Image (cartoon, rainbow, N blue to C red; front, top):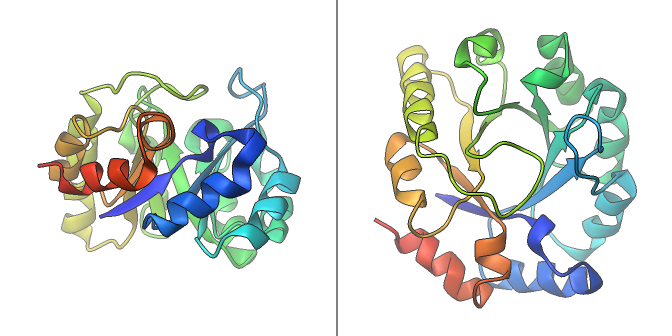
Length: 215
């Protein structure tokens, strides 16, 4: 399993410090929530923030694009230093092209599905994506409660992956803590995004240990 702390819950006044802390504590990658105030109501980071983070850490940057017209933003975020670009199925009319575009920029491409979006919407891109992010809350704000029904969605996605011998990683994001992680871990998720649980509820190293040890 891989732990991806979300910097949305970090202390923005001491962001470099918090990034260095979770890297030293054993984080596997760093999750960057990009919100445009249009696709979702919140407003967060742009490419310049990714460019500022890149020299601070050697961790892969897992950039979650909660934006309208994601194709327009892919080149800027790839240039800024993203390692993975995660595209919402709901945000583009041509998901296959968006995935291909991201991969042509030399980064890994992932697709994201909101809680209310069926897996059938992304089925055609599953053979080519590097990662699928299943949202376990409605996107837009950190600190929301985990939606238990999403564990079944993860299980169905994992079954599709196995049946077709596809090779994408399954990531979950939203309300992940040492209690909620168990069901999605058992269902087949590989990467676990945790924000407030890692950054605001204790020492990051101890919090990530709790996630790894959860049954």
